[in-house]
Image (cartoon, rainbow, N blue to C red; front, side, top):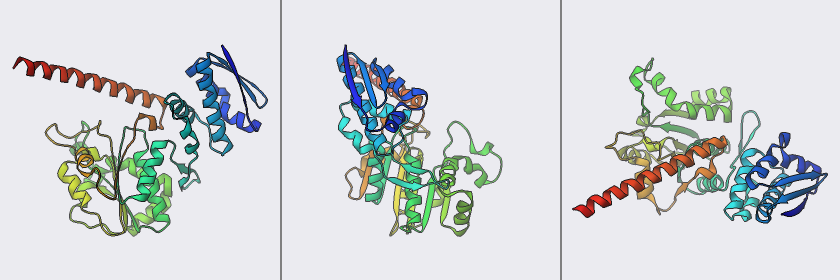
Length: 333
């Protein structure tokens, strides 16, 4: 057994690291099988030598974040633990984040993981950015935040949000109302993000003036979009032809962000996903960035990360079995 002592500069940092009802410290104790005791600004970690060292690195990293005014929450704690376990402790200092934009209620929006930070840097430095990753990685939310920031700074005159109206097991025809009423549910995540960033009153004002447009992908055909920040969401449900049509709408002074999750394709089996095709075709093209977020970048409930990992393992197992069957058939021939 080893005992390691960690000292903090101020008691406020200790309180921040411990979290409400000591929930953060309990996570560290459970993850590494150690005991952590607090005496004023001193922490004593007891456990197996390697685990105690991991716990010390985690606490030092969290204290570093707390000293720079970053909130220490469950998601931060688990993410720092992941960095420690994967030998990336040196990246913790990079988690102190710049504010992307401020919501209507004054909440600062920031990238919360290394992957998200790389995604935001790509958006700021490229004309077209493709963000691919599982649910909960903030692909759409951060893209909308970047669009609102660019609009407020008058880098663009319009924000255009679009997505394909593809059913996930349901039919548009069964929904009540006209075409706009039918597609509204598919655009709801985009509305929600804009409402939070701008507030309902400002959103409605900009919508009336034409500064904001939220529409199905089909409405993009035949247009040239100048001085606009354009976001294509749920791009895994575009066809190859739709993706090419969308990309060629790009006008002068505009920026495009394309987001999607290639594990959630709702297209018919005989259709190729435009997102998967674009990632393959556009790899290495100048001024186009392709960012691949992973389950480590999930900022929702911790269970979301576990669910994604479970499905990834199941898919890898299925593909391995399928490859084995194909190999056996080939050998028999």
